[in-house]
Structure formats: C-alpha cells, structure tokens
Image (tube, rainbow, N blue to C red; front, side, top):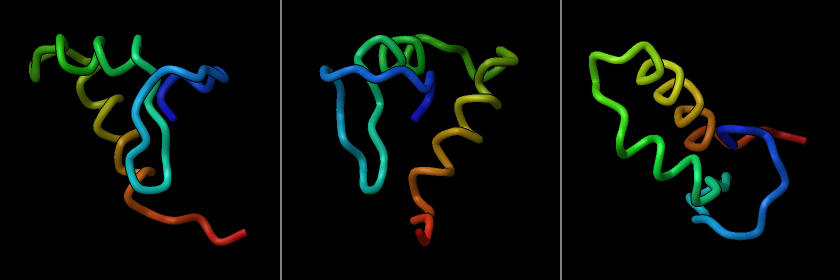
Length: 52
C-alpha cells in the first residue's frame, strides 16, 4: 500500500497491506518531516474500499 512492492511480511489493515520496512519507516518519521504527509495520504487509501 505504501511502497507498491509485493512483499509477504507486514500487516494487513482493513483493505490494505503495509510491509514491515514501510511500517518501520512510518513509525520513525517525525510529523514535521515532508514524508509524513505522504504517508498520511497513502494510509487514507486503506480506509476507503475501492469498488472493482
């Protein structure tokens, strides 16, 4: 969901998957970092189920 790579280790959240390396980067990112907004926007996608 975050990096777009196919990985097997990570966490499933509702309709998405976050790999271990992305999860680690998310929790270590300061809220003042520019990456924080990126992560927030990517995480929003998890909470909205896409109709297919």
